[in-house]
Image (cartoon, rainbow, N blue to C red):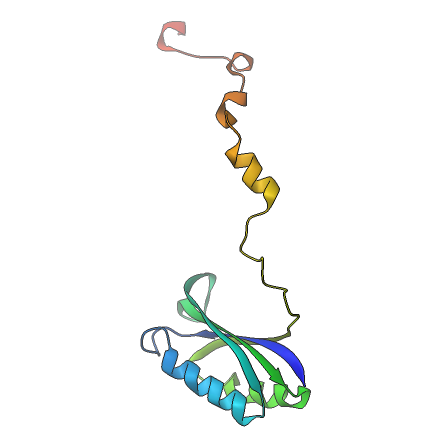
Length: 134
């Protein structure tokens, strides 16, 4: 059995709240297929860059599951035509791969925490126009 990460995007118009009841059915389905669910995380409702059909936003759910490789295709078939699921993707999961996904990089922090960040701009290099110069 390999470890997989399954991401579901749910239609917020077809589920109540954050879709916790529907998420429970997904977990039950994964366990029925012989999987061991190790993590379930709701990533909240997010607005899409481009609409999926007529949906402009979706509720993201992330599952980490130990599952047999042969069970991936039936999982896709199960939710492929489900109107509640806008998108679904399954990836190989590597332990520790998402531990620091949302932590900012050190150079990014340093750049914006420097004192005098705005003072670096030299005002003498650009011409200044005022009403008196007309």
